[in-house]
Image 1 (cartoon, rainbow, N blue to C red):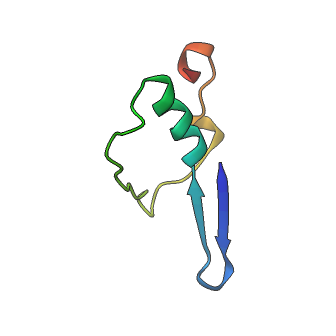
Image 2: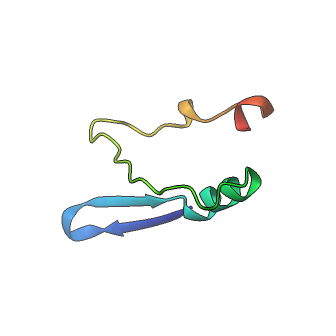
Length: 58
């Protein structure tokens, strides 16, 4: 994951490009159409939302 911070506007940008490429390769979907997806500004990141079991991590 790549995290980029823009201090002037107080924003963080998260990129999971490498992980996504790995998943696409695993399922032979390297040529799938790319789509951007924004996270709502009121969404709060928390470890509470992280997977806790091996099944959830897949």
